[in-house]
Length: 357
Image 1: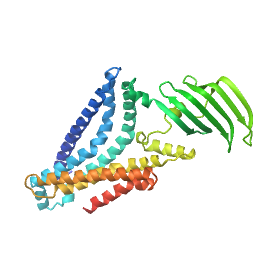
Image 2: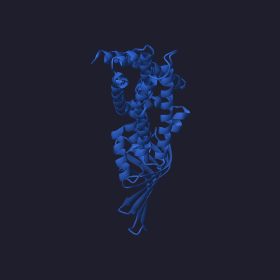
Image 3: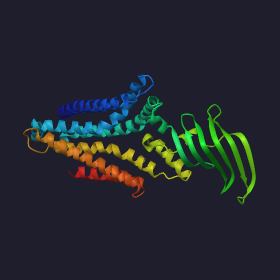
Image 4: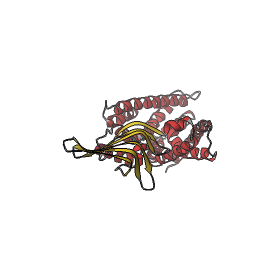
């Protein structure tokens, strides 16, 4: 690596590390204020464990902003001190000077993808579990631990769940299961309450009414039981979390979820949009690097003009990108535009603009 590359790289890495640490610390402090405000009956250690598990998500959240600041500050600093002019006088082009920064941004974009998909998804789940422990007994916990009036399609039939208590793993208020063979219903189970038994992975139905159908859907027989033990094709997670949050899944989990939902006839638009978003969003790092580098070399050399202009241009770019990305993603989730276009459209447009600059 040449002396110029080492010099620029060292300044950029120092600026990036400082910005990442500073922005992460501020956001972690805000998280701490929020979680300390919870009137929890659990040990204080859960607070610190929650904050520890939140760090990877915080880092991925502030990483584009930290990269933007580091690029703007480094290029503007070299421009103001006329070191860029010296490099130009030696026959180096502008993009040759900032090549180390662009190369680092490529690695940062790759690191953001890996961190977001294979570390943050797992740490977020653990953080959510710790937050659930902190919120036990509060109104937020009671709202979260219940599933109301869900109509679910399973592998071999259809379910209606009136009220599912996640904490007790118990269905209350009414339960219906319509078992389907081929294209026709074969039998239906109705129960007043259902209790999951984790030891055997069975379900105990209470006050059960079983209706058996003929092939022409006429009623063949009706049986009544005080209780009945059954095992459904779906596990307890199917009832407690009927629709997994796409934001908590990595690309491979999203692919499996898309395949499973399409096999069962469920819509998968949200998961397809999230899949393409996970792939396209890290390219934002490269866009900010190009825009920040060009902005840092613009403007008057007096009074820190390049730094101010670079920060202003990059902040506007990042704000408009986030706004456009969210807007088009919303259109994709509502099936107005194709899922791939909803994620790659804004990224491709801004990437083209950055390339033209």
